[in-house]
Image 1 (cartoon, chains in turn purple, brown):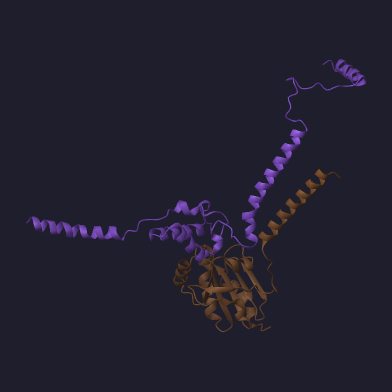
Image 2 (tube, rainbow over the protein chains, first blue to last red; image 1 turned 45 degrees about the vertical axis):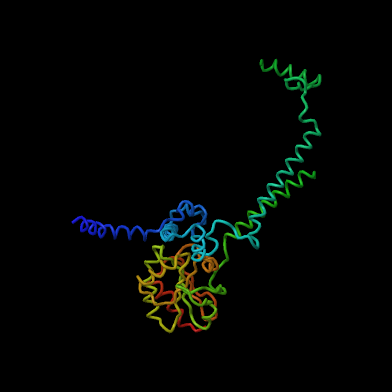
Length: 157
Length: 172
């Protein structure tokens, strides 16, 4: 009797275990991919778009995730479907190479400019302590001082 | 003029030139009736040997850009299919599934029982060549490869019968 029960239990559990075996472990997540690929029609990253085309792209990615593909494999499949422009990174050849070079050039140029400005500021004594905490009083001539007095009197300031 | 002033003007000019370049690059090519129809090698939907629109020189070509996710494309698909059947031998109808998934586009074609030739422009390069801004858009190309008619939006039976069909009798 006990053996019969064990066989029945094993038969009942068999479909569940088979189903568990066919379930593919995901190797990627939608949020992880959707910030690295573009919506095919809207020109913004997929994560920012709710257009119908973006929804279809998301469904496609989810399908590939459920098949167990990893992020790089999914990107390759997306590029097959939508072309390389779907990847949110520019090509590293031709004119698109400037997209990689310009930021580096920009940072270097900024560093050089800051260095030059700092050197000039130091040469002009910009960092030297003037000795007093008060702002220097501007000097005015006798005529200007007299006119100032007249104006103050006139307006009764 | 001081060096600083010159550099400031140079920087401003460069910035404006960059903006202008960006705007020109974004605006895409101008497409108008009478102009040469852009040509590009493109894959049939579902794969296969690439075809070029220039391969169809000598016959009228009705080029329709669509996508399965585009609702107005669903509205116009039956009219284009009817037009294809009614004008068999007079015009080559080509549907270009643009920026669409192959499987979705194939499902769309099955759903509407489309019999005309279908190409897949997944990256949208052909669409950009024709300066297509929104789907669907249609172009009639004459036997010499020149654009004879442009319609931006979903076509219907009336538009096809009144604007496209009469041109097909013109053998140029």
